[in-house]
Image 1 (cartoon, one colour):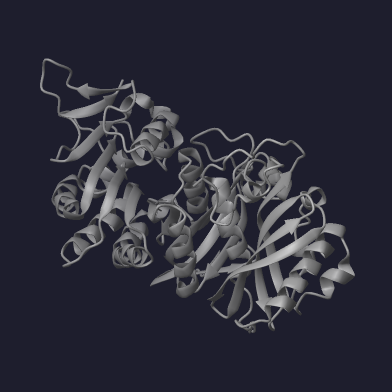
Image 2 (tube, one colour):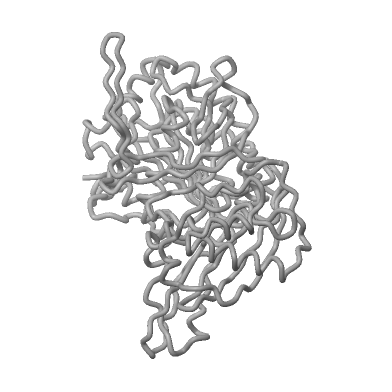
Amino acid sequence: MKISHFIASLSWLLLFSLQSDALHAATSADQTALAQNISNFVEGVRTSDLAKVQSTTARGYRPDAQPQYAILSRLGQVTQVEIGDERRLSKQTIVEAELRHADGVSSWNFSIQDGSRILAAEMTSADVYGTRTQAAPPKKGGGGYHHGYSRSRPNRTVVLSCELAPSSCNQDARLVEFFFATDRNIKITNNVSTLDTDAPRSGILSYGVAGVRIPEDHKPGQIELPSEWHFLSFDYKSATDETKHFSIKRLAATSYDDWKELVKRQADQSQNRALIFVHGFNTGFEDALYRNAQIVWDLQYRGVSVLFSWSSRGKVRDYNYDQDSADIAQAEFAELLTKLHDSGIEHIDIIVHSMGNRVVLPALDQLAQRSNPVRVRQLVMAAPDVARDKFMIQLPLAQKIVDGATLYASSADRALIASAELNDFPRAGMVFANGPVLLPNLDTIDVTAIGEEIFGLNHTVFATNRAVMDDLKLLLINGMKLPRLSQVHKFPEPPLASTYWKYQ
């Protein structure tokens, strides 16, 4: 499923599933009254008739948060309302409705209060019909709420669609939306997260959803952010321009029950697969949000995206603190995998970076000992900051539940070199004089040749280099085995026996 389609299905749920616990909607609302209210509401929005909108809405409805949907002017007057599925989500009734207009059709989701009063609404798809007589072209893919009404009108054809032109429906095609689970003690208010500095590690999972907008000038592998200067006691940060910078547009905590329901609905539309990203050392919560969004966007990943954010302090000087945090988070990560499986996810891929491997590998080892463990399709380990000998013991245990494993390693990773000196032992993500870590059923790729200049303290070569992102895309999206790129070759070269892969 395309990211833009994911937006249509998840964005309205994010917006409306987190309302006050005071909501009490009747599941047996009178269909006629509800259909009339929906018709009046959409007509009020279409014609900017505030009085008509207010006559259909419940107390707590926010007119300022209601998109105006430019496409409504082309759809024309509502002629028929068909009420679809109703379902309870927390203390709300969520209603799907399909509307026929004079010149097209639209699909909506509504949050209903007091039987027929509308608390929130969002259009999920729309088609505007032209006057040509040939049949409409068949739809390809599409979100879970899109329906091809054009077949019932053989004398008309689609000339504008939300799926083909999201901007016409006020859907932002550059918004990447995903789930997160974290053991950080964070509070989220008005899309802003605040860390409780007195108790930064909770040891308990909390859940939520996030939406990060990707700027128009985005270059694959990069995270474009406003400039910052720190000089003496002065700090300066330039203003965020969403056309130039990554920006957090939606961020909300959820209950686990709501989170699970959202995951289930998304899984049904994305072949029941998920990609989990686990960040590394020196990564704050917002930094993790940006990196996950960048990976999902650059991969054009179409499944359920989940960020697992453990309690890194996000500061270089707190390396030892981060190691303890990674150890604490192991049980929570195992819990997350189990809960994703319980939510209907059948195919799990994991990208784990740096010290995040200290979270993931022991968690997989724990799960592998269970009678009916969760399975992982692909485990991608980028620059693992784990002792080499420890890694060589842990990975074979984890591979009992892992179908494919890939290691990206480098001899030029300055962060890993510093870690090796600090810990007085080489790290698994390093390439040594006699080569990188080699294990059965592990694809080891030496990325040293990509260049030392991109190995900063966050050593995110796996995400900041387009060649590596291309390799990841072919692996995770296309399921291709090595060799996947022309610049990656077996090493040593024939006639010697090859033992690993190398960018050249």
